[in-house]
Length: 458
Ligand SMILES: Nc1nc2c(ncn2[C@@H]2O[C@H](COP(=O)(O)OP(=O)(O)OP(=O)(O)O)[C@@H](O)[C@H]2O)c(=O)[nH]1
Ligand SMILES: [Mg+2]
Image (cartoon, rainbow, N blue to C red; front, top):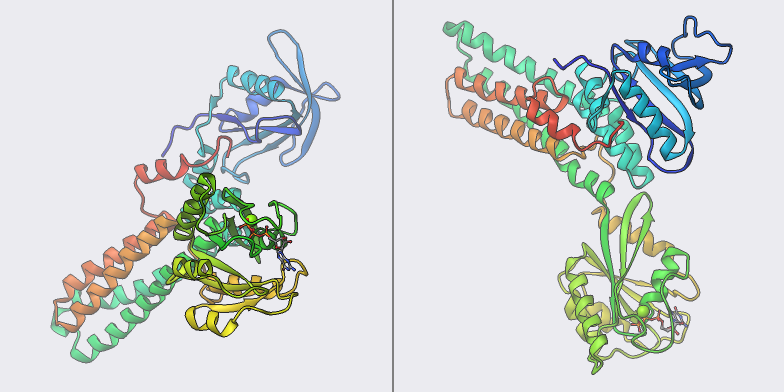
């Protein structure tokens, strides 16, 4: 299925560190390490598998010692790739690691392409495709929830789920094919209805799985939230209070923030990019006007807004402009400075922004912030609770959409009295789509595309 040569690469990021790992996989892995590794006592003997061995790396051509290392040899099939794998744990200097790799390449290994180790793991059946792709998600995860979702998939949660859907489908297919084989007993009306109910039930499950994509995407890619409001209402103070650090400059002078300040916030596992913007107001100052335009642009781009108002002052025309700018946008109305005497007409604010929830906070005193975080999280997640299985990969989503269409066609066919042969064709396409996810049927282009996204050495 692939060229059975031996590949090698540096598996850890290049840079100074305590330890760096060079990984070798393939039939010559053991031969190569035997040539360059010399155990503490001088003799390599039978290098036990899955054991750490202490020794040195030497260039057999001149006997020069490169480094003192730990070596582990994992003989097939119990290794990441399913082949013989060796890992050299050397000291983490970039030059040193490169020299060790160069020596390994001179002894006959080929430099691995990006993702090639994981690709071999897939081709050798150590991982299915959905699991292999989740390895990438795991490496790239930005919050604990993102990591948990990815780990679940590496461990095969999605694969099991899709496997069950496939089983259900096979049962239906058997019945349909039986009807093709015994045409004289062609499924009667009653059977057609029963069959249709089964196909619809399966379709419903797939629709739900597709819907979980949007949920998973939020956790992988994060959500952009823009803090907007007129100047001096405490937008930068709110940013700082939410982050728990003095990130943005805060002064009593209106027009303090000019540029957009971007910070990330972990909102109960949901990665959020927070934008603090310049106060929206009519200004003669050219720099400030550019800032205001930027604010409005960011309000538009954000997935949600926090529209901030000052509780200690009556509403101004500029507050009105802010409400106009955020109208129709998902978000919350934040009434800040509630530690001061109330002079803002809250009923008016609530009335003109009826579609948004109004929350009272004090960025200065730190009150209302926890409720703000919870409410914002629920709003961003559309109050959906976590689905039992989450798909995070657009390729999986596309395959499920194919499957869904095939099932919808089958339902129509069953209702419209279409011959069973055609229904079998629809269902066969559904089977192919499901198998594409776990990688039972794939073409090499798809594989190339998937594995080329990996980093070297993975
Ligand atoms: N009493 C009180 N004062 C606050 C609160 N939040 C902010 N302030 C004060 O309000 C003033 C303006 O705060 P900023 O956070 O700079 O306001 P801003 O909306 O970012 O202002 P611009 O960047 O100029 O648009 C500062 O003096 C803050 O100390 C609050 O909750 N209570
Ligand atoms: Mg500010």
